[in-house]
Length: 85
Image (tube, rainbow, N blue to C red; front, side):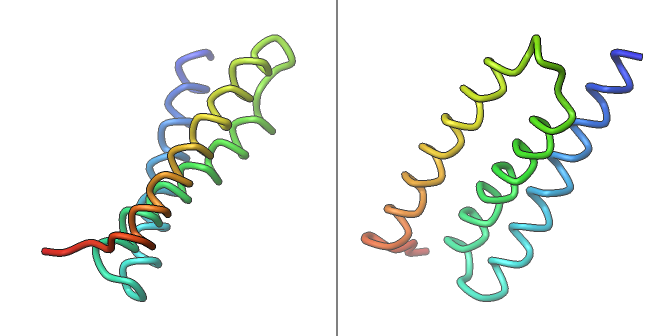
C-alpha cells in the first residue's frame, strides 16, 4: 500500500509539472516552460499535503517552503534576466 501511495504521488508531481510546463511554454517560451514546471510542482505539493497523514505533515510543509523559494528564484531569473537561447 505504501508503494501505491508513493507511485501515485510521483505520478501527480509528473502530471502537474508537465501540464504547467506546457501551459506556460505556449505563452512565454522556454523560460515560461521552466517556470510552469516549478509552479506545477508547487500545485502537486499542495495535493501531497492534502493526501498526507499528520505524522508526515512537518516534512511536507518544509518541502512546500523549499518549492516556494525555488519558484521565486526561477521567477526572478525569468523576469529580470530573461532566458536567452
